[in-house]
Image 1 (cartoon, rainbow, N blue to C red):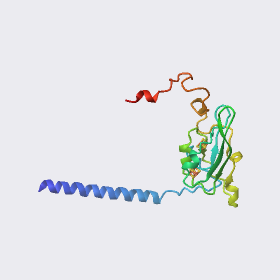
Image 2 (tube, rainbow, N blue to C red; image 1 turned 60 degrees about the horizontal axis):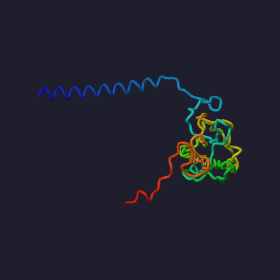
Image 3 (cartoon, rainbow, N blue to C red; image 1 turned 120 degrees about the horizontal axis):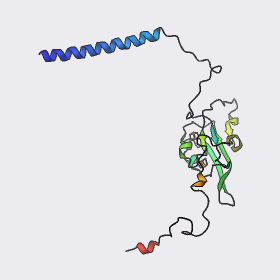
Image 4 (cartoon, rainbow, N blue to C red; image 1 turned 60 degrees about the vertical axis):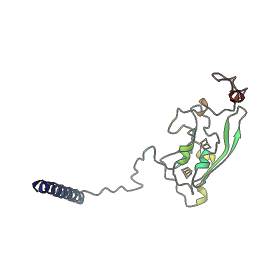
Length: 185
Ligand code: SF4
Ligand code: SF4
């Protein structure tokens, strides 16, 4: 009986202190000065990972990173990215034109996640509203910047991307091709 009474008092005490704590916090906020940030006079610095205007970046050698693989376009939930693909004489792919319709973009960041070359990146710059919706269609010249964005050192073509020249198994550190028929039982 005494044990039950002790438990009840403990629970009651915890409930009362919880209530008192909550009311104390509410009272504290009642007497605090309100914080009003006047936009656009005051502009809060957004974190680097904030998702707003999209850019196309360059690798450390100044080349366009985009290899026109269409992954960003395929993953975009509102289908607002379009491009054409082409290949240079040295086998490097690129996009002769690249277009994003910012009027449809929902700034989800999926294109950035999907991009294997870090070409397409979202930036914290959000102040690009327009009265004419047609001016929100950005062409490649509006998107391409002269730097590497968030990861300036990354160079996709150091790892992959150029079309293979020469027979399989003839390149540095490359094993000869497997003869699949020799694996048959
Ligand atoms: S942020 Fe989202 S909606 Fe905008 S272009 Fe990228 S994938 Fe499409
Ligand atoms: S995913 Fe990246 S490399 Fe591929 S087309 Fe889009 S921006 Fe270019």
